[in-house]
Image 1: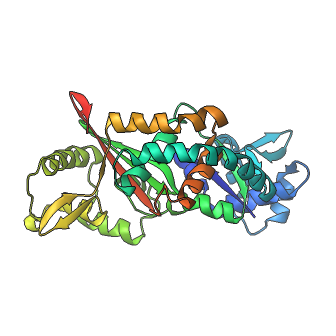
Image 2 (image 1 turned 45 degrees about the vertical axis):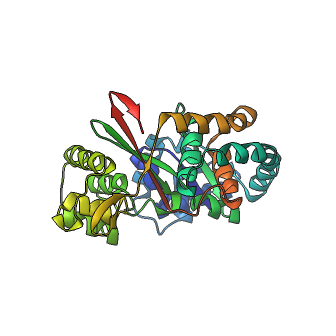
Length: 317
């Protein structure tokens, strides 16, 4: 079985990762040695309803091509064997890089949580200039590792604050961050998840811009040392507590976010640059690398990583 994997932010492409109908069609198309007609799709997958409309939607989305009435996938298909070959080729470069990188990272005197965030953020930022590709990857332990990594970036922007969150690819159909909550609220997907309903009971149909403007002021006050009691019954701060952006420290709110600074981010970009230059990383290579970093203890086993970036005249931590 193959599965679509992408870091693409387009809502329709993101949702395809959890679309069972598309999963059945993509596996049928891969199993055929030739391009197929719509009639062949219907005959082989009679259980799928409205398949003609769905195929048209997928053609318009750019994940399936149609030429003279015949269909095929648009994207890179990666078998188990190809995954193993690529990992073997990449691993020697990773090992050569590791000793020097570890020495540089250890000298920074940061927490393991901060190290995880900065490593992933520095790597993903190297690929932001290009449109994320679509991949069809065969089920394997390597794919399971990829899907469990917090590598899917979402960003919320306020007037003076950006909040970056990285989520697991296999958990994009649930609420784990503010960004996923507002995404699900807007597109009305996964609104029956436990976390979504908890946040929705607190916030309701709140305007995202108003919410971010409010909480960024509160986060700055907390960062500056102002004590805000958890008992103050502030539903916006309570939602941050539920999401673990804030913690309860002896009855007062305390930040649990990684503060992003230009200086530290640039140092991590310098640390990972030899890998980027030497391997010309694409998204799949990046995912393999993050998985390798996790297996070697440089990236923690976190399902979500969140960092906050502030603008106060100049960008500061």
